[in-house]
Length: 144
Image (tube, rainbow, N blue to C red; front, side, top):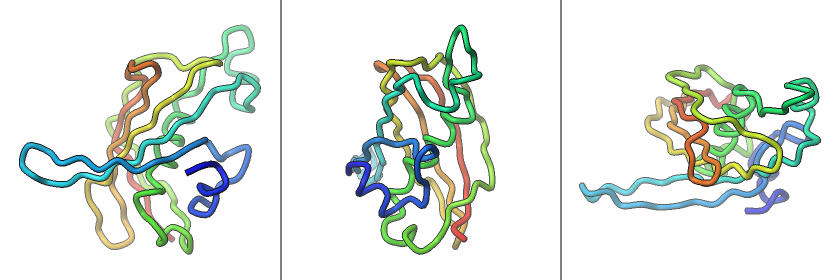
């Protein structure tokens, strides 16, 4: 999906639309279970609002922005349902930041839904740059 197709799923718009492209990946694990992943990308240009003061002499993508990128990458997995409902965070758990993300980096976001309880969605996500893990964690949100 390109940015215009992503906008049909996500309610976010610039400057808070933080996924440039999004694709679905289907994997069969050793047990024969099928797992759906959303794989998104975002290229850090260097002129983003969140880099202006974080930090002026050494810009680094804030961790909370990485978490938002990971959450937005989950949208594809919700299909048409997300077109009529708003996803709101209900939790961010076990998040770890392992590597800095800087201007010029292309972030690869990979997420999967691990559980669903009616309107509550639980997901696991990670962000990598050049194969290096930058951030990972468990996210939960409600569709309102």
